[in-house]
View 1 (tube, rainbow, N blue to C red):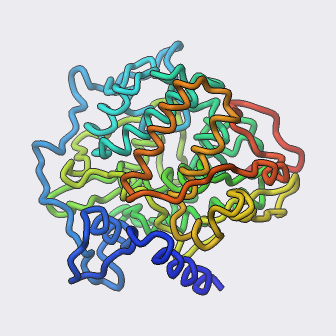
View 2: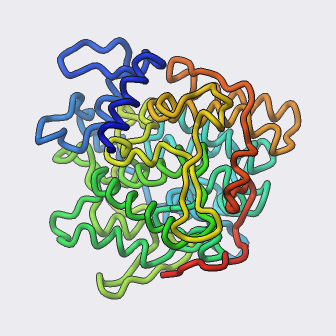
Length: 420
């Protein structure tokens, strides 16, 4: 069933989005982003042991080492410092790569994410601008905060259900607290400390586990076009792509137990793990991805869809656990995208949906709408252009009691929610 769905989606992608056709190894690619796509969709080491189509750049210790001494030494947050659901942003604030109070401008977010994690300037600009406009004051935003202040209050438009380690808002009443059982599920997937590597394939399996867990435990689980199809997926891929420690022996990066624990503010032995809120740290002797291999918009795709095509479909529980139904992309886009077209290029579908949906639902001023549209258009332009959506059918989302754009950071626990 899955293979049939994906085959249909891939066939549709060639016709609807020819610029995204990924060329096979040995065939010259028409553009750099096609080659990046091909490598990005391969598990580490390539399928069946075959080397990935592009090797990472040669390790450069001097440029990849991240300083955690002096002005960038770890300083725990104080009472007035914002720390939220994103461990990477928390860590950068704790090391003064972002302002220690946790509130930063678009420019500061771009500078920090590119220099510390090797995020591409294009992706960093999109994420920082999108967040500041939709969830901040237009030029800056908080890594915590409430509605129109920061990530904490962005439930449904940026922060979302089925997070790797944070609880679903309607399941736990908080979208910022780490749920230790969720972290432990991931942590235990690599039991041998000597060989542990939480790479993209490990995270694919973990992503499937968390998706099903939200269906079975959160009556209001909602999986929306932008927050679900794009941001939710990125939260899983970012763990390995940005937290892995790189070396001459492993230029692609290895994410072992100690590094994972450091970035998620976890201490203790395997059978006695403890989370300390807001104390995420960049480890000593940690080397980011090479900036020649920056994580750019062409990387920003859904790695897991071949095995889990349900990640390409918008849907929700309908007030009770295990009542998950999908909502057709054709219905949501008033026919602009078929289900197969949206599945073939979810980045195009989700970003074009955002352009059509968000201005009307957020009440943004004309200048901010233009800035938001410009940021999103930067994504679609990097993909070679996307089919537009003239008008969205938001009434289709009324079937989802968990549909929201500005929930959190706290809220009521839904009736029937199951907590671990």
